[in-house]
Amino acid sequence: MEGFNPSPKTQFKTGEKVGEIHPSWKGGIQVMKADCVYEWEGNGKRVRRPRKIYENHYGEIPKGHIVIHIDGNRYNDDITNLEAISRAENLKRNLKR
Image (cartoon, rainbow, N blue to C red; front, top):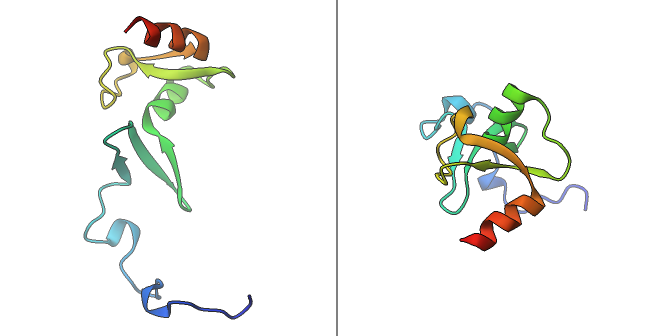
C-alpha cells in the first residue's frame, strides 16, 4: 500500500542518534543466552562471530560443515578453540553426551 505510514512517531528521523553514536551502542556485538555471539555487519545483517573468525583464519567453511567450540564454551571465540566438523560428526558427538 503506497503512502501508508502506520506509526510515524516510532520511525528514525534525520539527525537521530543511531548506530555508533547511540548512547546504548555496544560495539555491534549481540550476546545471545542460548546461542553464540553475533556481530553486526551493517544494513541490518548479522553474522556469527565464531564463523567469521574461523573463515578469516582458515578460509571458507566447506559445505555441510559447522564451526564448534572445542571446550564447549560458546563465548570463547579464540581460534585455537574453534573447529569445523561435518554435521554427521556433530550428531555423533552430541549423541555420546
